[in-house]
Amino acid sequence: MGLLGKAKEIVNKVVHSGMKVPACTWDELATLYYKDNQIEKAVDAMTRVFVAKVFVTIKPHFIYAWFE
Image (cartoon, rainbow, N blue to C red):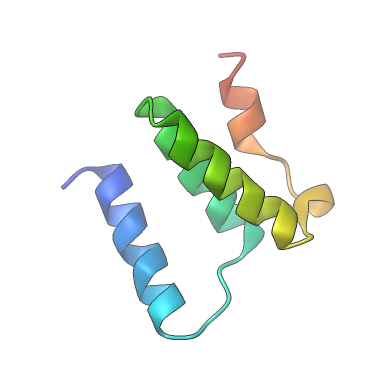
């Protein structure tokens, strides 16, 4: 299982436990999806960053990944 698979597994465990997933975690997941060329899933994860309303307080790696 690669890094993306492990990240998805952790996020799923957090979601199913009823805990709130931090915006920075969604941002990292979006970056991994983007690097794996899964753009729709990356956009969905970034949407969750915005929904978490913490976007302003983090440095979004996903956006930087577009320019690498």
